[in-house]
Amino acid sequence: MNDCRFFVPGPTWVRPEILEEMTRPMIGHRSAEFKDLFRKIIADLKPLFVTTQDTFVATCSGTGLMEASLANCATRRVLITTCGAFSDRWAAIAESLGLEVDRLETPWGTAVDPDALADHLASRRVHYDAVTLTHNETSTGVTNDVASLARVIREGSSDTLILVDAVSSLAGIPVLFDEWGLDVCFASVQKGIALPPGITVVAVSQQALARAAKTPYRGTYFDFLQFKKHADTDGVPTTPSIPHFYALAAQLDAILRRETLNARFERHEAMRDLTILKTSTYAKLASDPKHASATVTALAPVKDPELIRSEMKKRGFTLGSGYGDWKASTFRIGHMGDIPLASLETMLDVLTEVART
Ligand code: PLP
Image 1 (cartoon, protein in one colour):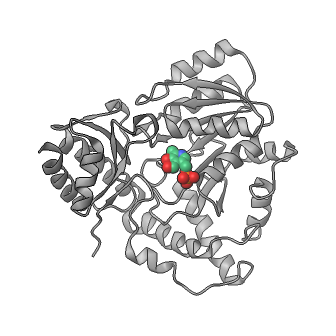
Image 2: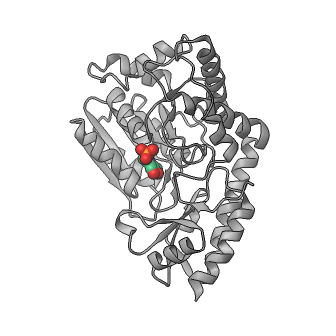
């Protein structure tokens, strides 16, 4: 039965029939069968990112693509916009690659302000190879307005690339890669796409590929030009996680044709609204309600968050802990992927009993 009791903000609950897909017999990754599977996946990634540009699948978690984006697209200076733990991770990676890093810092729980970004770009007056954005900050449950932020970056400079982490938004919150003018946008599959962790999907613009061609030391495993070269003949550069490819093909089919994207986005919004409504008597929304995420909610309860989580665990429900700076004061409810609204409602009713008493 499709009843979910697992509400961590990634990895998220996976439907049993999707898990089953991962037990199919192995095929060679240079075989005709694999090429068919690959073609199907790549075709279905285009409507997911709403793009006509290149899409790839990498066998790694999302952090791999954070590193790949920077390694392929930047050689000198980058601007990292931060508003929580995951947006901050970009800065650590950029520094580890030897890039000059500027930060536009926004307090935890709030969204990056497009006007502040415009002011920063106007006053700092340096050229950035790239600006990083985090569509949905999973540590705080905030969704950034990537459309407006990207517009500001484009107005400031036409050759500053826009690198977007959509790890906890893609397939739960609309991502419009072409319309927003993004250059790299990626998501690991254990969140909105609702697969077990292990692969990451990515869209890459022509401009980003052109930049990669001019970037001398891109590394090997994450070289976008190798992704492109192999994708042009329906393949991947190195041995992929083939079980994940089976499951991804089935899941993309279900998302696009069984549920449909719009219905999926509406279900996520309904899950967010229900979560906020049903927790309001015993917990404060930890983040700015105007930017409340449709995939994850961080709550600051009256009672000790860890006590609440352990009481819920005893009742068979797993919730997410607070993250980073907010570990002690909050807990998080992941409401992403394939979670049925009815399962969330059942959990929230039990949570009300636990958190109020
Ligand atoms: N970015 C965001 C917004 C995340 O939520 C996470 C993980 O939770 C990551 C990046 C890192 O992704 P991964 O754990 O797939 O490497």
